Image 1 (tube, helix red, strand yellow):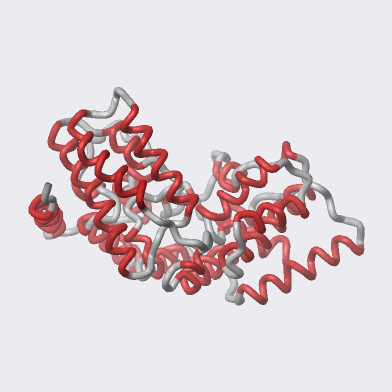
Image 2 (image 1 turned 180 degrees about the horizontal axis):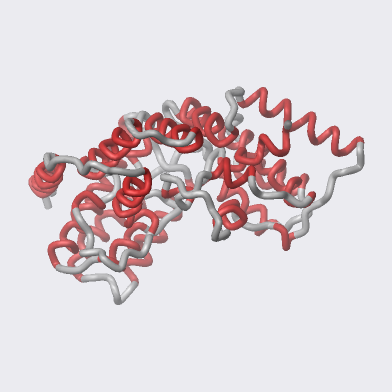
Length: 348
């Protein structure tokens, strides 16, 4: 079945919605609220006043990108704190990189989020078109040497299979889910799991290090600092082996506090992560944990370590199980550079 006319119609609708005048925000909080609403399908933020799923909320479509860009541009004209300004600049820089080709971020079940807020058949049709769009973007990405890694690939296959097998999935999505499932079944993920395996991935990773660490150092310079710190800890007998009970996702430690500092990035739970990390007093075991995560982060995203190399490094540094190491490696894959939010506290 030829999907091209359908896709063209979808983008006409999306572009039409982009032509509406942009909102004028009177405060940072209003702009943040607009971003939270825009990213509903990505972060599943509950909104009791939601009218369902709009075209602009279909992740990484032209309408979504135009709306997000307009919000960022207004934020850049506001009087913000240093931390807020730094985050806006980081998000604007990220617009240059290939995230838009991966319309379904593998660490969030976008389809499930969408189905939880959809209100009518027209919105279900939008989801159907978005599933087609996901495949179209992945095909376009392949032509630009941009491919999912095997972990991302496995997660997307799982989400699609889960939806196909669920009795709660609207029958209107059956065909588009089946087509996407067939495509993902034959899809060949890239060999490298880190950002360095993507075109412009090294520059993308550097921008993340710069933001989360609040410093501009190369990966090799960071690695030198981490190595020196580990040697110092060993010579002073300060090294504490982390028990399995200390292992948790990075965001759990930082984002579960009611006093979190509000930010703009859905992937950090709308927290200003560097500032939140700076306000978190680490126990020795947690310090050891994040030191090991930073070291492994560099190994994966800069030195192109394999999954096995990443897991072995964590097992060497921490007293954890294979399953704990797997969880930490996935955190590192899905949230590149975020562990460096602790760099100022641990490496200075």
